[in-house]
Image (tube, rainbow, N blue to C red):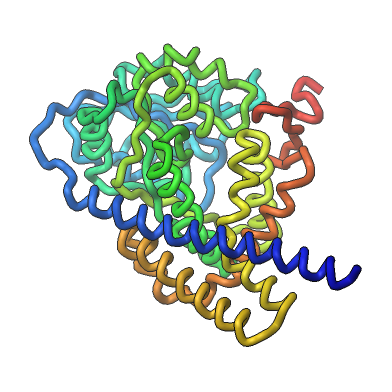
Length: 393
């Protein structure tokens, strides 16, 4: 009986490792294809339509002013920036006012939304800013994102070029930028060498049917076709929903090869772990089949478990081979595609990074409650969520 159980576990681990190695090779191939697309990107002259940048804010985290300043320094003909906060006492208001004085040539509006009636407060802010926006192309970026001066021009090129029909939405690749502590270094490494691999593979295998929160762009026409922001009031993963619904409505969702920066916060181990766990639980409820399939992407942790379960020359050889494949993927994706110059010096952290990511994925298989911005929420089928304690209480 014990021998039967041993071989059953061994076969199961072998299947996960084999699937993981196949995924790694597909990710490397897909990354190279996307790199070729970047190199062959069109440089033809296009028109640059006016754009409205929407920036929902809450609080003034470290680095906020420097991140926001990059959006004021865009090399773009006509654009405006709209900010939204709940109340005037929010510390982010002072940051916005300083930037308005520093860049008086950029049209800026600051909206006070009040207490949000939606479960997803960010969606309510986006709705209010979209209503006030002057232009038909809306660019939505997180507060912890920063961009190069040609960011808006790159977005305009994506909307101007289409292979299959109307471009309704665009999202961006991003590289992780570490904060001041060890755990943010791990999270940033995971962004650049693990999470983006899944995005690149998904884009290659089935096309973009989701968006990435740090940078999302959508036309008002497409937004209206999917019911506006109000339709996603009770969805936690608004980036996934926005892209998924746009694709279902018949619009093309494009992945821009223009890379932006996503800054990892300095939160310490516990808060970083909770942040990853929240994302995993949200992902499981938003796209359950994809979440379970995500298990194959952890080829290094599965191979490590295989070696611990069956220590032998062949399992050690396999582990060393997988370590080399993991470093190869990190180099192709993080260094060559995303231009993350910190990756070569942090390759030794990959096993620890992947172990934490694997642990939070396992943790995400259970539980339906999350903590988001110090409030407790309960997740429901399809990605909906609600406060455990209603705000009116």
